[in-house]
Length: 352
Image (cartoon, rainbow, N blue to C red; front, side):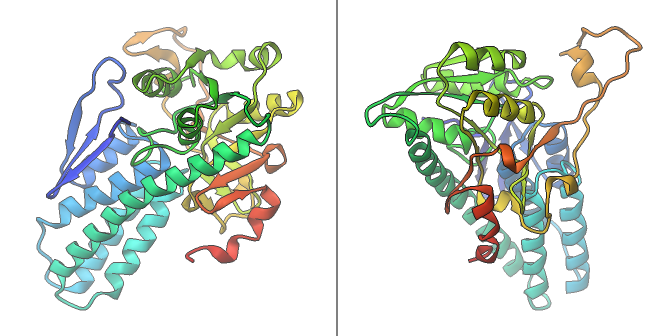
C-alpha cells in the first residue's frame, strides 16, 4: 500500500510532515492559508502536484469559516490568498495553474453565492486529488512501456531516479517513482538506484523511505556517484520528475538533475522526464525564463541542528536547475510520451 501524504475529510486537512521522515510519521493539521503557505515554504509538503493540492485545500478550509459581504470582496480575498500561496514555492507551475483556475471560478459565480463557491472549490479540488492519482498511474504505465523498449522482451531493467517523485510528492502513486512502481508491478524491475539529493536529502529521507516501505529492490547512492554507477552498472534509463517544463522541453527539476542528464548523455543512457501535463508551461518558451528558487544557506551548512560547514563560508543554494531539452530523450505524461520536438505540437491540446 502506497503512503498517503495528504488527508482531507469533512473540511479537515492534514499533511504528513515530511521534515520528520524517516524517523517519525506525523500528520499536522492545516487550518488555513497561512498554515498552507508555511507548510509549502518549509517543505513539510513538497512536490509540484502536492503543493497545488495542499495550497488549494488550505484556502477551501479557510473560506468555509469566513463571511463575505459581496462578490468583489470575495474575489479579492480569493485572488490575493491564491497569489500568496503561489509565492511559497514559485518554480513549481502547478500551484499557479490551479490558482488561475480557481480565480476564474470565483469570477464566474453570481453575487451572494458563497455556499455555492465553497461547494465548487471543494468539488474542483477533490476532483484534482482523484485526477492526480489517475494521471500518475497513466504516467507510470506509459513510462514503463517506454523504458522497456530499451531491453529484450523478457529482460529486467535497472533505473536511476533523483529526488522524490512518489506518493509523498503527489496525491498518490507518483510520477517518476510511479514509473518505477509500474515496472515493479510488472515484474520487470531488477533494481532502482536513488540519489541522496543534497542538500535537502529528499532521496535519502523520502524516496528511500517509500522504496523500503513497498519492498522495491533499491540502493541509495551519493549524488557524486552517478558517473561511477553508470560506468560500473548497466543502467537502462534515468527517470526524473519536473517542477516545470518549458514549451521547448527544457525542464526545471531538483538541483543535480542537469548533471545527471549530462552524464547519461555521455554514457548513452536514455533520460526521461515524468510529469503531469499541468507541469508543462507553454507560456514560457525556454528554461531561461523559469524563475529558480534559492533556499536558505542553513540547508547546506547544517544537518539538522548540527553545523557541518566552516562558519563564515558563503553558500549558493539554488533549489532547482534547468536540463536543456537536447539532453532529454522524452517527456512522459498522462497523455503519452513525447520527445521535446513533439511536445511543441501539444500546445493546442492544453485544456482539452
